[in-house]
Length: 363
Image (cartoon, rainbow, N blue to C red; front, side, top):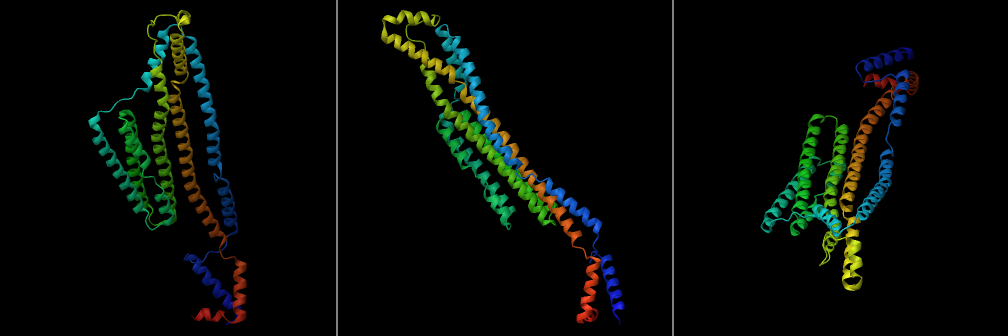
């Protein structure tokens, strides 16, 4: 059998293999298109865009608070400039009392509320355990699942509100914990659904489940941070309540009396004058600071929601990039890895020269 015959046999075999999908002949045009698609896929990666957005948000956060404080200063000036009678001061105290009022819990309700908190704790632990069982066997997903917070801080905060008999604060924390239980259950079902739908595409399944766990962590952090904001607001209201207690009309003074007139009348009584001035100072401080805790809470909550939006977008983008980029990369490698015609000729010549070609035909 001469070399030409052998080459024909080899080429026929390769052609037959190509028809059966076993060998791919290099296609220069398709390879060029695939490589171009790969370059374009690299161009759509988010890179550091979400990191920049987060840093921009941090810069904006300081400006938002500065604007809020400037507005509070303007509001305080308007309130203070309106002080004419002692009754005007009492209006400031009354408004502040309404916004800082604590809905006191019935003393006998404490044990029952604590039991409800413990139920929520057990539900959170059970849902997290279920999620971790879903990804058992995959180290990468296992690390993400292990990072989920069991909400110990929020549960301790609920206990704190029970001890303080603060029914409103406890209700807010319990609502956040209830949302967390529903969130964990929803994501656990989504993880299981991904397992069923794309069980035959392991790489894609891992990418989607990874994105789900990253999204879950973002939403969980948001709920727990929101619960912490309730506590921060409560702490910032403590000095406001002290100011309210000090903003009262001095004894022996009529609410309808003009402030300037009262101070003039008390010039001969230094002790009473001192009390009246201290009251005026306290009410002025209350007018300046009374609504700031609520203002700060609203600004911080808006910033927290903005941060959540950025982080959720980042988690979504990562999985899109992973799926799209991975698919295009595999496509490019497929076409780039095809058998080139000139390579076939070199293989035939080499095998013939060393006498190996005949063994391939007989084995």
